[in-house]
Image (cartoon, rainbow, N blue to C red):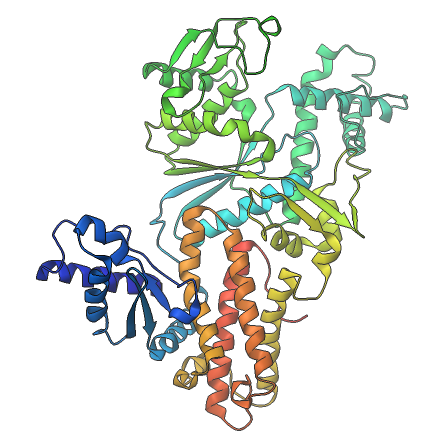
Length: 580
């Protein structure tokens, strides 16, 4: 149940009735009519922009429309007042029974409260992490993993059919570098002293790979030229790295539905098929690109290449897909991979990239637009960098990784739940300073503690009530007399609970799971505020010794908060705390 959608439906129906009566002209488009919380809560419970967006096409004064609409809305039992403000905004106040009955529905629906059918079962592919299989996941991958997993859960909650996918970048030169690095560890396992040339991977994590290579192949590759061992070592090392990556993801509770190998695109005709699809649309041609901006003419050699006419689909320049020597560019297999996604029948694609992929956004969107004839939207989310701090200093590199802080380092320091929640307290396109000490601090300044403490406080109260012989099971609380919830602090909590379904839909529509973390913090703040008021006002205490019916009503309100917090934390992939 989305109360804001219900009131918007009331507004639209009222506008339609005004049109039928001749108070509004025929043919007006109501699509941009919105019902939202007012910027200032003192102005009412909801506000609508109906008069403002319809005034120009209706050729009427906005206040005239607003006053006529206010009169009609005031006839509905749910509306206690409809007041025109400013040039024509309309502020609405709802009857107390609306909030009270909504709490009842939240209690009755339980975990289903807030779920939406907005997605209508549309198939969405969310590709995230997709790190090169050359080592353990680092903190940057951690942010992408958390963001992608929460987004996938959010979309599922909003009624989409979601596939979580990892694209294994095992077809490029970096896996050859991995193989050479692993081979050095293999030689080391045989007692040889080795040095890692610049550009190889010196991390100690490859010692396990070297030992495993020795166990499987013995000394068969010792002293042999690269062409003898490269393919075998590459495949072996890549698989071991993917096992390591799967373990890392498991530490965060991330489980992929699909692991898709880039290597599977080569030599199988898939790249050719994708480009033939574009060629059939007149989007592939032989040509010479202009020199890159900032390059001097003598720094650049014009070469004829096979190009994708990406400018016809919103890109800044056309993009090469085959080099002058006949080799594929990096872009070609990416086109083929997305062609495969489109061919699998997804209605929407979402790619989550690291901050260093910003230059890839337009070309990839152009490719998907061309491949799907504009029918499959692609949203690309960039996750900005994360800096870790501990004891006031930037957290140093992991010895085992060699050059970076790993996902395991972070999870070992603060735990998976804290890691996930904290990384979702900033929008993905903003840089993030992750203070490991602050993440474990028990204060209002620590959002994960503040939200978890609210849920634990509710469960503690329910346990104490049961110990005191007060029935507080869901069936009893569902039957509570919620008309006793009339205090502004109680209603503030009820209003926040009413916003939950709306927040879910907004977050899903914008692909922004951080909105859920923000909402949970605000809801927890209202709950803590109500709890502290109860220390001085007996009627607001969750357990009211002088009134069993008031106790049941207050506990019902608290239980509704717990339902929403648990649902929100579930979307974020965080286990709700029942005690702290």
